[in-house]
Structure formats: C-alpha cells, structure tokens
Image (cartoon, rainbow, N blue to C red; front, side):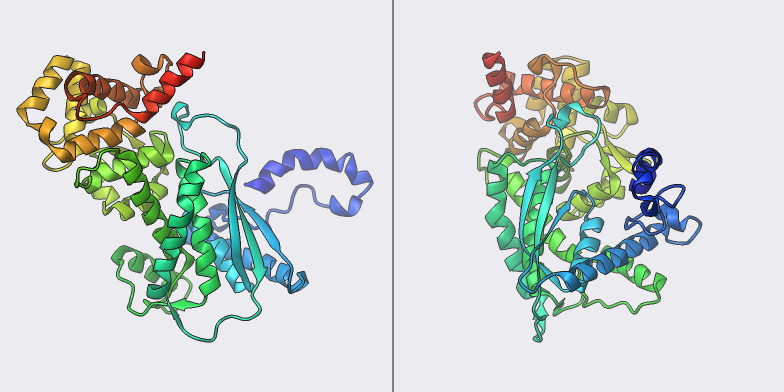
Length: 426
C-alpha cells in the first residue's frame, strides 16, 4: 500500500528534513494504522477481511470528508482526484462524500498516465484520473425520492456525455470510469433514495445480506447505493460501444457471450484483467462468469481472468459447435483455429458448410470482433507480447478469411485503417 511505499522516502527525509521538522518524523517508519486505504492485510485472519477493509476505508474517508465539510465555506468547492477501476472503491468514496454532506456537481476525466496502447501490454490499466467537483449540500431533501424515478435520469446523463468523452479520445476501461462521474452527479444530487420495489438482483441481494449480517445490520431490500448508479452507467456504455462497433445495421443483436467477449477486449484492451471487473461486465451482459466463461472462453488465475484464443480453446477441449448455435464466438473461434492450424481454404469451406456467410448474427459478430482483437503481426508488422499473441493470430486469421470470402458483406476494420494510415505517415 501507499504507506509501505512511502517508507523508502521517509527514512531519507528523516535524515534531511527531519532536522528542520523533527515533530513530523518521530516515528521509525510511516503511520500505517491510520492510512485511509482498503487494505485486507489489516484484518488478516478475520472472517470477511476484504469486506472489513472496504468498510474501514469508507468510514475513514467519511471522517476526512466530514472535516473538509466543516472547514469549507458554504459556497466553497472541494475537488477530488480519483483513479480506480474497481466499482467497490467508487461506491465507498461516494458513500463517504454523501454521508459528509457533499454532492457531486461536475466531473471531468483527465489523462494522467503515460501514453501507450494497452494492446501491447499484458494487463489492463486505467490511464485517466476523474476529477470530481463537490459542493456542500445546504440541506438534504425531505421528500422521499425513488430510485426508479432517478435511474432514467442517471442513464440520460451518461448518454449525454459518453459521445463527448469518446470524441476526446477516451476509450477502453477509461470510458467506463469517465461515465461514472456524470452518473454519480445525478445520483448524489438526488440523495437520499429508496426503492419503490425490493431489489431484484438475486446475487447482489445475497451479497448485501451477507455483508449486513457481518456488520450486525438489518438487511434492507429497498436500500439504494451508489453501486446502483454505476451499474446503470456501465449498462449505457455497453449499449453505446456495441452500437459503435457494428458499422452495418442488420437488425440483430449479439448473443450474450459474444457481447461479453467483445466488450471485455474493448474495455480492458488486454487478455488479462481483474476477475471482479470481468464479473461486473458479465452481469451487464446477462452472463454468468463462472458458468459461461470460465473453462469455456477463459481461465481464472489468482485475482485475474485470462482470455483464451481459438487454439488454446481447442487444446482445452472447450470449443463449441462451429455453426454458432450456442454462441457466435464458437463459430468465430472454430474458423480462426482452422485457418491457423489447417489452412485458410479449409476455414472457407467450414464457413460455407454452415451457411455463416448469409447469417446476419455471424456477420455482426465478425465485424465487432475484428474491431477489438489486437491486430496481429501479419497486418501490423509488430510483435505482440506473449499474452496477446494468440488474440493477434486470431485477428490475422479472421481478417484473411474476411478478405477471401466476406469482403463485400463485412467492411475492413476501422482499427486496421488506422494502422495503414500510420504506415503511410512513416
């Protein structure tokens, strides 16, 4: 955590600045007990260490924000910088703000990390920091407000800003994070909220019930949390991105598993990413991650999820039927594997055998997948890192098949045009 990292600098500062400000360097090392951070190590050996760490973080942040609220003038402004992919951290932060009497009145994503394509990195990462502009609430509304009335306004706020963010060059996981801001603006300004009907999400209800029992609290199925606004924001981004990745309107929708695969590559831009975040995306797509993805499209390694390419799926014996009846990802991976391990002509024969060339759902899936997989060595001229080589090889195989048999039905990927433009510049 940050305090441990700070120890390296602390011991040297103690030998320099410590002579001028001895009162700030009385400890042997930095204070780790009072650090506001969700660190499960603080609760090692206790049941539910992760949940305890999250609650500790929320309470500490609420105390910090309460003191800020106390010293801030009524017309004052507090601006926060926050960079975190996990929605749990956003949920805790927003709860702390609202409990302290703040509302979020504006938000802006700023690129604060080093530039570089995540396609050439092993793991996903957030490049942007979201700036949250917060103002004190004069008084919270006395009337009861219902989440069912506010949720459409949350979605509308996201829809209004998402195009602006994308035009500004924000993409991948940063696009989701950027949209958390406008969602939480509407949510915090409408707080407090309750549900008109009890929570319908069985899994989330079960998790919140367990958490309530852990902290000796009564479970309230009508309770609303900032996480609800984040789910609404993620759903809007999902719908937006799927519409952007399909250039030809064929009046078909991608099946749930293919949608998840496409959005996972689109959001994380890497074959390895946090399991918890993959699970949140799966819920938006109507996919059970453990049942539908793990062991079929990917494997879980520690706290991460690792996507499989077509050849790996074949080696694991997890390739589905080539006609795509269960999911079009099965058909696409069957074709990619055949092109890579047998021949392009054999893949074309498989395409014709199952009539996929005239199947709108397949054509839409192919179009979307070619926009999110990393461009392979054949078409980019660059070597990908080991973790992404399989995905790149699948791209090359499917693009070769598109050019051979489907060029008139599926347009050239936009991302490939960008590569070609860069080559012309060179």
